[in-house]
Every structure is written in C-alpha cells, then in structure tokens.
Image (tube, rainbow, N blue to C red; front, side):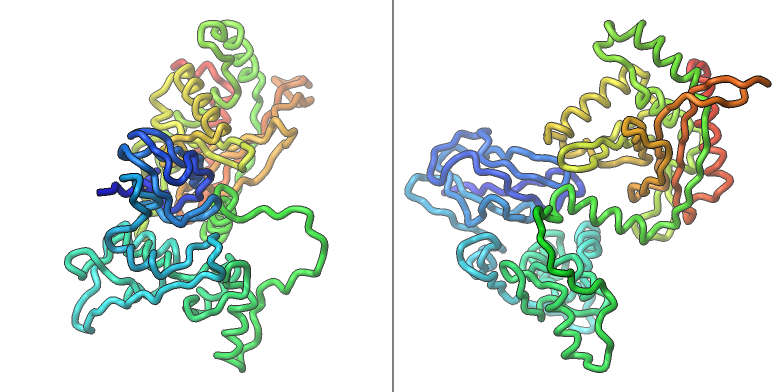
Length: 455
C-alpha cells in the first residue's frame, strides 16, 4: 500500500505554500528522510522529505502552484502504482482541474452545503473559525462539516471549501466582500479563470442596475509594463498586512531626538574589547534591542495586543522582540524571544543567526512569528526619521533613523554631538499618548546613559 506525502504544517500561521521545485522525478526511487520537493511559505523556503521508502508518484501539482497545507502532493509505493488520493479530498481532486495544469480553465466542483436544520447549531473549531475570518468566509453554512460525525467544521473543512472557490484578484475580493457577493457565482475572465474587478462589477451591475458603479480605482491607462511582481509569498503578505494595519489601527507617531554620543562611544569600546572573543562586533541594533527590551519590561502596557475576538487588551508576559530585516524577497521580521532575559552577546549572536537564515530563505517556521514589539532601522540608508507601519497584532513599533553629528547646546555651551531620531508609532486604541510618551522617554534616557544598562 502506498504512503501519502502531504504538506506538513510549517508554523502556526502558515495555511498555504507555493511549490518551488521538485527535487526528484516522477517514478524515481526515494529513501525515507530524503528531500523530494521545496515549498515556499510567506516567510521562507522549506524542503519536504519523503515519509517512506519506495517509488515517488507525483500528483497533479506543478512548480508555482499554491496549495493548502496538509494537501497530498504525491504518493510513495511500488513502481507499478500511480498517484491516488485517499480520504475526503479524493472526490474533490478527481473533479477539479488544478491551477497551473494544462487542462485549461479551472473547473471547480460544487461544495455541498452543511445539512443543518434551523434548530441545529453549526459547531466550528477555533482554528477553523480563525481561518474563515481571515479568508472572509461570510456564510459558514456553505462549508461541509466532517468533524464530530458531520456536526463540527474543522480547519481542514474550511481549506477544502476555499480550495473549491474560484481565484480572484485582491480588488475583486474586496469589492465582492463589501457587496456581500458570493464569488462562486461569478465567472472569471482573467488568466486561468481568475475573477477580476471587471467581472465582479459586471455581476453587481446586472443584479443592481440602479446602483452607481464602484468608486474603486478606474481601469489603468494602457502603458508599457516592463516588469510584474506577483502579489504572493512575502510580497503578498506585506501587501495584505500593511493595508490591514493602516485601516484597522488608530496610529499615532511620537518623535524624539536623543543625544547618542555616549551610546556611540559605548559601542566603539565594546567593539575593541569583545569582537575577537565573541566572534562578531556588537552593533547599534544589538544595544538598542537590549534597551528596548528592558523598557518593555518596565512599561508592560507597551508589550500588548488586541485579543483575537476584539473584546480586550492583552498585556503579554514574554517580551519577544522583532527586528525588521531587508532581504531580497522583501521585509522580514525575525523574532528574538524573551529578549529581556538575554545578555548582549546572546542577543547579538541569536540576531545574526536569524538574519542569516532569513536572507538565505531558510528561516525556521517559528523564526518570524510570535513578536510582541518591533524595531525597524533605516539609518543605514541615510534616513533621519520616518513613520513605520505597526506590525499587527502588536501595539507599537519603533522607527530608528541615522546617527548624525549636529551642532547643539550641551551643558551651557555649543558642541558637536551625535544625535539620533527615534519614532514611536502606537495604536491609540490600546495605549494612550502620555503612557506611550513615557515609554519613549525611557528609551531615550537609556540611549543617553548606556551605563544604566549595567545597573
């Protein structure tokens, strides 16, 4: 009997992956633990290993296809066998034309609605409810439950339902969601049957002829395009999260200028004394990270988030510091867990390991999740000050500019000092202005007096 090879869960928030490459050919013999394909999440590229010995029989998925986790992508068995899906998805797979295949436009099966009488209640697991909210599933009665003898919707049921829906552009999804339009009733005219903005507006115009057309952006002027960047993977995640952050938070920015002269001197002294021993030279980000972690411990209301159901503000015990990093694939935020409990050497060493994995596209599933506060530094690009976007679900983010010598008053005289602009952006729904200002003031005080870190 063949063994099914499926995409495992690659982190708490990963729900789908993109196939990057098959590492072995269809029909090749593989050994248990041998990497057979690579997949990309919104964070990194991961190898998927064979879970049995035998001959690999590939499913219908090709490089570039986006598929949900737990999806069976191949089977491993005898040489004379072929790929065959067992279980709940067998019917779906046999009736579907997989996106990216050569079968032409996508043909999606109808998903049976949950057979529930008005007196019966539809139960849905917490993870299934979370996924349905993220994917804007308006009516869960359209999902066929398989848990609890057909009375409970599982996360897998939601994934099967989403897999049956037609693909749609982000603008088309937004317009349809706002209008309460079921995309399954819209025929897509885009590439591989993708539902476009024009498709949705046409259906809405037919249903509601008296309603003016959407005020969404008008069709683009026909101009030559020399490059297209798909909104998927890391770029797609940034697109969605930045828009969500701007539209759901009450952002306020506080800006202060710190005298970083002593801070710079402390870093230069550390470089000379510990670089050879530690194997790396401590950087400004390392020192600032330790200071921010200490300030978060002293002002716990800044280490906060909005609860999942939106009913309360949660002060998080663990101080997990996100450090934004520029990579070839886009902005990533590696997370240093329990940063307030780490010394400078431990912090710096872990930070460099996280950055190395992120830039090599080899981040571990939990490297980029679980942050409670983020620091983003653009000083190396000669940026003095900026207003970063809050990294949801966190309550705040600290933007860091460059350290630059300026002529300023100092102890009653005119002097050249190393000045540093710090920008704190916070969600005013979760934190008030004065408490946030005290937190930023504390960071400034630590920067100006780094000797306090030893106390």
